[in-house]
Amino acid sequence: MDHIELNIRDDVLPTMTKGSQSADTRLTATENRTRLTASTSRTSGAEPASHGCAPSHDAPPASNTVVELKNIHKTYLLGVEGVPALRGVSLTVAKGEWVAVYGTSGGGKTSLLNIIGTIDKPTKGELSICGTAIDANTTDDTLAALRLHKLGFVFQAFNLLSSMTARENVELPMTLQGLHSAAQRRDLATRALNRVGLGHRLDHFPAQLSGGEQQRVTIARALANQPEILLADEPTGDLDSANTDRVMDLLYRLNAEQKMTVIMVTHDPALKHFCSRVVYMRDGRVARQETVDPAARAPRARRTRRQG
Ligand SMILES: Nc1ncnc2c1ncn2[C@@H]1O[C@H](COP(=O)(O)OP(=O)(O)OP(=O)(O)O)[C@@H](O)[C@H]1O
Image (tube, rainbow, N blue to C red; front, side, top):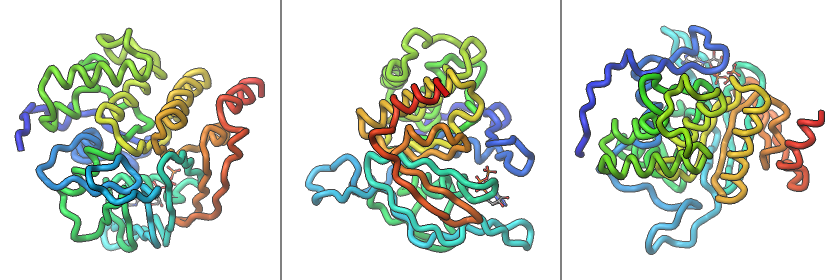
C-alpha cells in the first residue's frame, strides 16, 4: 500500500449531513472520511468478481444482476436499545437500471443505500454487490476494492472543501488514497469534470459555483474512477428546479447512454420519470415497486415537469 499522508485534519473535512441536517443524522468526521474516500479506497486485496459489471478476463458469462439483497435487516444500537431501520428487505437491481427509492421519513431509505454502498453492514440477511457476496467475514480489503472499482457516491450536501478548486476537490479522494500519479489524478479529474459539463470551471472554488455546478462537481468526484453503480442520496435536495433539471439530465445521460446503474433516494415525486423503477419503503420494508413506462421517461418527463 502506498498511501500518501496528507495530514488533513478530520475537523476540516466537510461535515456531511443528510436531509434535514438534524443532529441525529449528523455524521462524525470519521464517517465523513469513509464516505469521502468511499469510491476510491486503495486496497491490496483481490478485486471483486465481475458479475453484471464490467467483465474481467476469463469471466464466465455475467449475470445481469449488480445488486442482490435477501431479507436484509438493520438494527442500530442506541445505548442498549435497538432501533430497527430495515426489517427484511429483498431487492434485485439489474445492470443499467435507475432505481428511485421513495418512502416515509425514517422508512429506511438511507440505511438501505448505506448497506448497498458497503458503508454499513446489515445485522442479518444476504447481500451481493457485483457478484461479491458480503457477510460478516468479508474483509475490509474486499469492501474497499468494491468501493474503489464499482461504486460512486453522491450526497445531498455537496461536501466540497471550500479552500480547494473544483479539480482539486475531484482529485481529493484519489489523493487521500494514494491512487495514481499526481498527473494521472489531474487528468482523471479534468476528464470527469468535462464529462459533467464543467470543463470551463476547473479552477473555480466552490463559492464561485452555483449550487447545481457544485453538485455536478460532486458527481464528477463520484465518476472519476468510473464506477459501475452510482449511489445518490437526495442528490437534488438542495437545488432549485433549474439546477435539479441539469443534474437529472446529467444522471439520465449517464444511465441511458453509458448504462450506468443508478440507485437514488429522493423525496421529489417529479423525479420518478427519470428513473426506470420506483421502490417505496415504509417502516423498514419495501412496501411496493413499480416500473416506469420507458415511453414516459426523460427527456419527455422533464418537458412535462416544466410545463406543469
Ligand atoms: N446511526 C443511527 N443510529 C440509530 N438510529 C438510526 C441511525 N440511522 C438511522 N436510524 C434510525 O433508523 C430509521 C431509518 O432511518 P433512515 O435514515 O434509513 O430513514 P430514511 O427513510 O432515510 O429517512 P428520511 O427520509 O427521514 O431521511 C429511523 O428510525 C432512524 O431514526
